[in-house]
Image 1 (cartoon, rainbow, N blue to C red):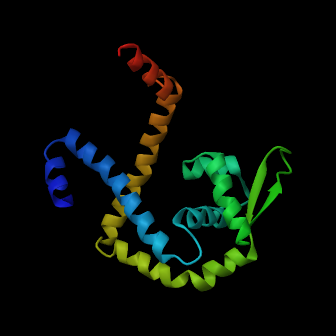
Image 2 (cartoon, rainbow, N blue to C red; image 1 turned 90 degrees about the vertical axis):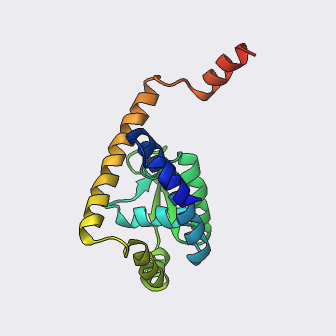
Length: 176
């Protein structure tokens, strides 16, 4: 099935764009399913939130994490609440804005990454063994460029170039 899709999408630039978009979605789902079943104690989303927190120079707010992860602050709060119950993060009020809540990784989160997650980092390497060093470099730069494309799309949708879901539904229902 995948080989058939690859062949069908390879014919034109427009089809290749569709293939790239489809691949991003499918690959994301496959990786989430794979890692959700393999990473002990954490879902892939929980792991990504913790990874971003550990790489940040300072604690991040729910909104900041939502912007980085590409989801709402409410979704970040749900993920972080589960991590808090597992004692991987704590919540604190931001000293800069009393309304903002920051999320801080705990020592238990650090210990998890140092002790329990190491074997899974080795498994992650398997994903990239099919690439040469040069291909990884190219893929990295292309993926970073994709972020720019996503930002452009977000900006266009914010400027009302595309109708909102409700508007589309309303407009379509008038023709029924």
